[in-house]
Image (cartoon, rainbow, N blue to C red; front, side):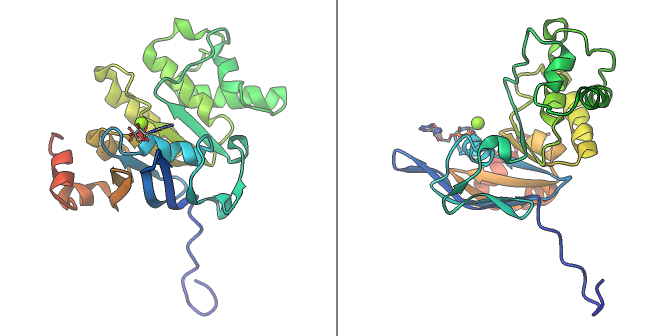
Amino acid sequence: MNSVGNPAPAPAPRLEIRNLTRSFAGRAVVDDVSLTVAAGQVTCLLGPSGCGKSTTLRMIAGVETPDSGQIVIDGAPVFANGLALPPERRGVGLMFQDFALFPHLTVADNIAFGLTAAREAKARRVDELLERVNLTGFGPKHPHQLSGGEQQRVALARALAPRPRVMLMDEPFSGLDNRLRDGIRDATLEVLKDEGAAVLLVTHEPDEAMRMADEIALMRAGRVVQQGAPYNIYNNPVDRAAAAFFSDIN
Ligand code: ADP
Ligand code: MG
């Protein structure tokens, strides 16, 4: 409350995208998409293959250029009206399905790769992250000595090492064995919550979104057709197609 009894203004969302649009060969594959993600929250961009999820993420990362719209991080534009910050100046972390680790580097050096801190501070951050992803003692190993799930955790630690303000994840679990996936999803969520970034996670799997999201943005043919808390969307789908999309969850 301030002195006249009004609630304090809500802080700016960590990530805000406004009216983002991108066409290829005259077809809008991302069509007027707007959404916000708060720090410490996971928003899932959920929709069938080809609906424009990855293109949206790539524009936020700065590796794809929007035709129009704005991208704002912590209240400051990173893309707007002729301004386009390069990817490395956006404070954004990335994790994709084929999260290739550097095979010739140790686990510790993989995690430290993007860090510019002094040697001791780097080593402390690496140890902290190894503990956080439950791989204490794995620092000197090489990627080929690790299981797929362990490699995935190293990739997560590497992406989080520079403390990104926004973490962008594109189908990060789809290369993993089915039996491991739920456990890795839960463990990943715990690490993400501890680190406190705003997370935008792309998936085509409704059950993954239901399990991980604070908020779901349901996408179809380039547009966000519904946005809200997972169970609101699940219980009140906007139309038949949305209901059908969720119907194979058990
Ligand atoms: P999703 O991640 O939801 O599967 P994408 O964002 O990868 O969807 O792709 C959306 C649509 O845009 C698809 O039809 C895809 O073929 C098309 N597309 C994506 N990138 C390009 C590109 N560089 N050139 C032409 N078409 C593209
Ligand atoms: Mg994709």
